[in-house]
Figure 1: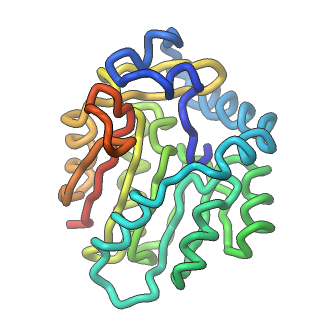
Figure 2: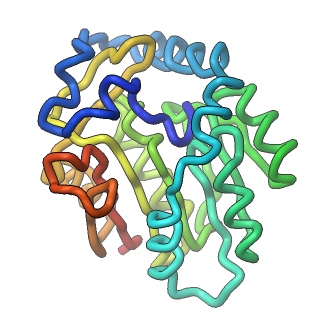
Amino acid sequence: MSDHHNPPRSIEAQPAADANASAPLKPDHNLSVLARQTLAHYEQNAEDFREGTRDHDVSQNITTLLQHIQAPAPFHILDVGCGPGRDLRTFTRLGHVAVGLDGCGRFVEMAREDSGCDVWLQDFLALDLPVERFDGVFANASLFHIPSRALSHALQQLHHTLKPGGVLLSSNPRGDDQEGWAGDRYAAYYQLETWRSFMQAAGFTEIEHYYRPAGLPQNQQPWLASVWRRS
């Protein structure tokens, strides 16, 4: 699974209250099928995805993550779902040490070539991360592809790969706790309260949350960004 996995355009462009109406969700509980089909979509559309997201502005999320890290710089950052490597380049340009992770093999190749960073090929459903390696985890538009019954394991992995006091930022499309197929990709759309319960159960303490894009009424902000510290 990949970073900046924006929902299908028909979903992304609508207010959150209507976000799922245009893409009926069909529940499917076979986790391996979910992962394979979602990753296949990104493998088949890797070039188009890179071009379509190249100019997306996620500077608010990057700045927010970095400002809450209390370790001395340069920070060690894990970009979970790094996709073609756009944000790896940004973290590197800012002087930090960034490592990418993605489940899509083509994205891993792109990110290594374009950023020069170390990039790991790992499926979100089978994360195996080093203990207390990173000051920050950047999960921008990626974790919502994890089915709810596999989410706790993934969050526990992200928790233990952070150093004590480390910070995680997630940004996910929000909804009314629905999950299922959105086109060729599996997606889960959580309310803040539900996402908060998952994060707290994994050992995180909330720092702040906000809705995106900035400057719009909340009903026109389909993205929920939240910032968490390893307790």
